[in-house]
Length: 328
Image (cartoon, rainbow, N blue to C red; front, side, top):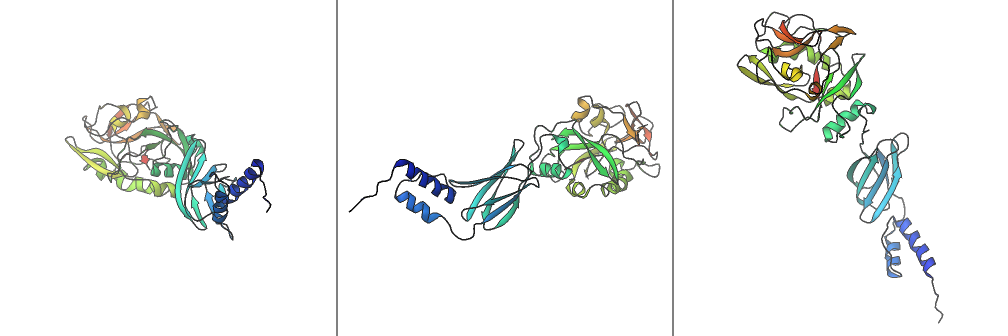
């Protein structure tokens, strides 16, 4: 009887071919390991996983010792041939940031999300998703800004706080708080009659005017805005909490101190703590812009910020600028 001798190089080449076909990196011991690995290789139609992610993202699917990798094309699509059915862990990595999800493979599609570390390079849909998933990168900082189209007009929007506002439903802190850099293109009064009854919580600014602006915001933004808890004075000695999607800032949230307002209306946003300007424009002209605080310094009415950036108060129905804030 003759015996066929195999050398190490040939065995290694065969083992590498088996591992490639089987989608595994496991060590194979000749001959039993070769036999079991070949028997484990599936034949017939190869399952495909279509991953939607960022363009150029590195995509890796893992199941035990098996690994399949690819790169997303310019449309953000990566198709992986999966060697066997079962639960796979799929990771997309782009710009140093990763997202991982698990999926049970037959022939399915999934979406993975990654963000650009530069805030202004992202879409608003991406910003909403990052806030909702709690994956806001540390590189997005207070003072970062990018435009948003509202009612056909572009407005610059700033990050003014990080983990500053509480979700009204008690589920935690909003990762970011945003505010218009300048004022909305239409001026409004806090009310349409000379009344401050109920303060901010009962004002037409809160109940009618700001909701009408929200309706004009991009669909993904409008659907992404979440209610946060905002405190305001109903009277000089009574602080109430409202659930607000769009809101105005209080005196102390802007200036860090009180001149005309009651105590208990929040704390200063980091944007203003770090020297962000309190001067704003409306349609490129210097503007007065509303606070949600009532004026308890003698003249009544609501507070506003003057053209020189200082706090003022005493008006109700004047059509001043609106620089609203919001969270996702």
